Length: 72
Image 1 (tube, rainbow, N blue to C red):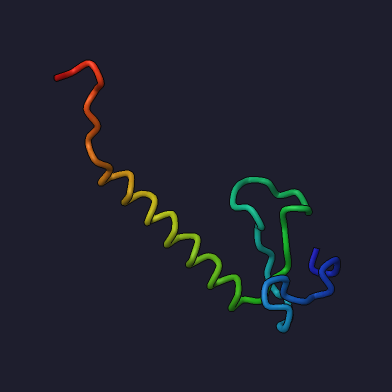
Image 2: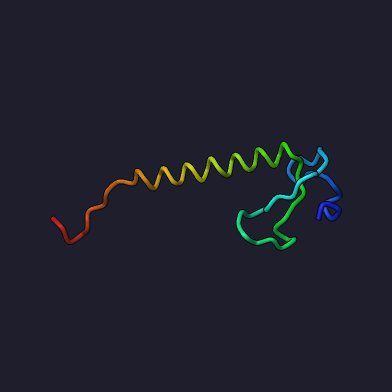
């Protein structure tokens, strides 16, 4: 997979790709969902994805209570 990408980071295109990253997070380990990335870009992408997941969890927790249309 790294050879397919020419050992070039597919995010910054300026560093040597030394790690493999899922393009779309999850269990799809198909080669079309994997990309070679440098460690710095992989770390930044992983941190950004974790922060977004945390933001979504908190948003669900503090969702306003909706009244049922039939209740007065």
